[in-house]
Length: 380
View 1 (cartoon, helix red, strand yellow):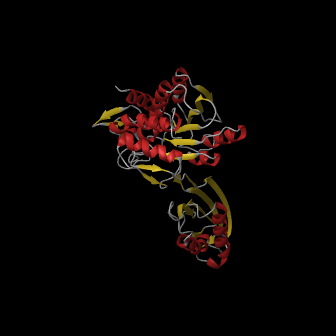
View 2 (view 1 turned 90 degrees about the vertical axis):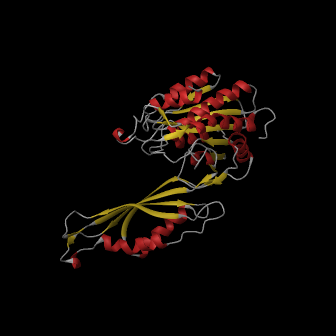
View 3 (view 1 turned 120 degrees about the horizontal axis):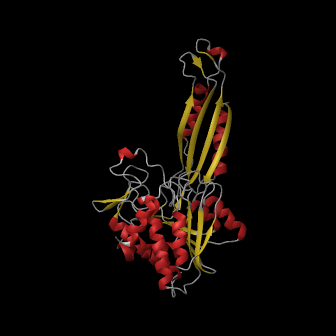
């Protein structure tokens, strides 16, 4: 069995359902320590984080990943046990195979190979891992980034191993992400009997016109790098369960995925203006999980694009689509951030898998990126 298959399989066997790391970082830290890396464990609450470095000073190239996975769902609905790696039809199956234990394993191998070939490399090469990417994302990279900010630890370039590809490894890279802003709304009414509506105040009826206006609003037009900002209601609930009672309140949860043409404060103000305009009595709590970011053409994008051409024989497509990633916490440190990893077709699904041909190329891809940025005579 090849080194990448063996390490990915070993990580899959560890049922690290978020936020449980299940020993993945201990395994990786011990292995990289033997290769000459410095290992720092950063545990916050129930979350394990690890910062592994080789070299000193600037520039700092960090590979970023997560060891936690989402729950498997009913194991009986998988073709094989979710935490038992199985190879079938040229694919490696198991929870986390694509998201993102294959990438984490590839990063470890790439770092080992890089320092063995270039022990006197420029700057610092690093690996940053968390067990809180698939969960609350409160005590993972968010906390690590604040720690780095407090102690003046820079990151100049960050490669995130999220599964960015669509059909084959390297066909798409993420060079930015939209911001994510959620609202938790309660609309207050007056409970009463449906036969006496004059004695009640129906929050469902009250909210319906406001919701229609919010859903029809064009928040911005997007730009050349991002699609327009979107608004979606994800949860809504009201009622007592009886057919003869006007409810006293309504709860709704909604989310903005917003581009760089809008700010969180502008979106908050616009929503609250609509709600007040419809004379609603309401409470509204906001949660900003990440600002939008964009990595423009520069050393990192050039290195990633060239490495994909070298290893995969492709001209990659830069994109800002998809959801959020932990890159949103690293970009505000001043880092260029690019996400590149396996095909994302089966992530979070039953029978998650990664194509073996892609997995075998992944360590070489990460190695080439590092060499283009930090090896002697590198372009970076």
